Length: 315
Image (cartoon, rainbow, N blue to C red; front, side):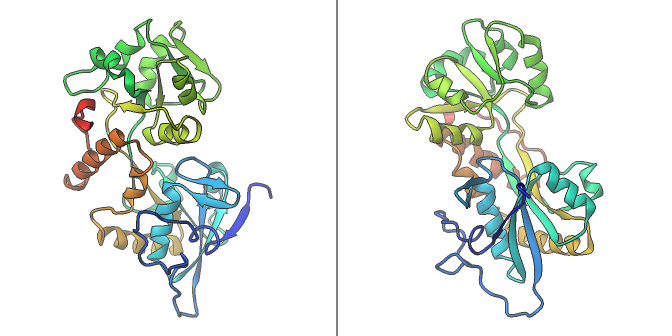
């Protein structure tokens, strides 16, 4: 089928160039060290397309989730690892079915419904939340809309008729953000567009003054389309909580066994070194924001993390 494109792990998932030096357990050619046990279990890493978590270019898989996936796979040499490129809906359907090879995925968000058929590891991925993205040179224009914590008050900036924005039609930005957007959706200063891949270019051309992106998403499009443009993400008041994702496997005996092994790896690495892959997909100021939030998360026994972040403090 068109959606199912198989790649052997050594030629794709584990052949990636890893510039951060975290995959020291790999051989010089990027292959996972062989386990001599004759009874390897097959583990299929199902990969939905979502840049910059997973970027598939000419048969080469890259992105922060791909690198994170490689990091964990390298700690599990007792498995034969394969990669399957598949839409998220198909992935969830196959996990729900529970038949065939062991299926796992790296970027899943646990929900009550998914827990019925997926067994989840402890938190693996940490993400900065949806933020207001602006041209870095325009930061002073947005200072009047920051509260005492340095977070932008979205309803106030939406109400400024001199600041134009673009949002994607049909995209859910989160309950708090969507509540504010819905109040101003039909105003002249809010442009509604069918797809948001070109919003950074619109910033560069001066057609809009701000938009909404995940910071890593904005940085991906900046590098791809407007590498000379300096952008900055401003945390939204009431929406500064780190987002958590993790590895999930089909809720079968083998899936539970695999997740138990992954949880052991997580426990043995309390500083979460694999999150450095995500950090490298952030701009400089956003990276400082992430490092501060990650440090708070790690040292707060994993309670909800809210960062008292001032944009000027990250410069």
